[in-house]
Image (cartoon, rainbow, N blue to C red; front, side):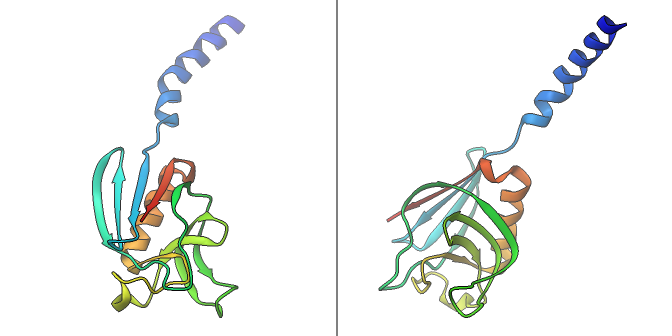
Length: 142
């Protein structure tokens, strides 16, 4: 009986295991000079969006990061309770998130976060959370 149960478990894991373990890789490439974010899934380009990053006197960190945590309805404790919808945090208090200041997209005006149109932030949030934050890479370059 044990042998039969073990064979059954092996059969189930060999079929379900790989399917359950596979997740898409989401990569967001942010260009500070172009003020754009390009999103690819499994190496296939999906979206290109305008962003706003740090204005003079502030900085958006550069480098390669893994998404750390997500907050659908986040508000900034540091900047007057400012709304940060669909926030994906990648380094300390730095996040990619939606903004109501959509007219500023394409220009550096933030305190350091990467701001997106709320519709685009919702898409990125869904991609990151559904595929796993550990599978979401954020690359920020000059």
